View 1 (tube, rainbow, N blue to C red):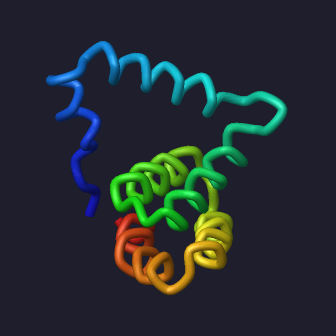
View 2 (tube, helix red, strand yellow):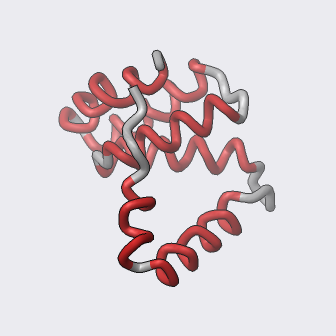
Length: 102
């Protein structure tokens, strides 16, 4: 089940900073030398590696909306698990699969 976006709560306290971060996120996430879908898969792998639950949930949900396949998402997560080890595997088992199955 998807959790609320923590950036929404932070925006009430730091509206200019969060807006700037969101613009930066949009710019970096857009198609460029790498397609947006590839960038989204990179974000999933990094989110798993650093064990960021809100990041995992947000990026998996948006990847699904973009039409990225379950297999691609899981493969990107496996790269994060490789770099993050056992704790990253546990986060994937908890949060990534929860979001994939939502």
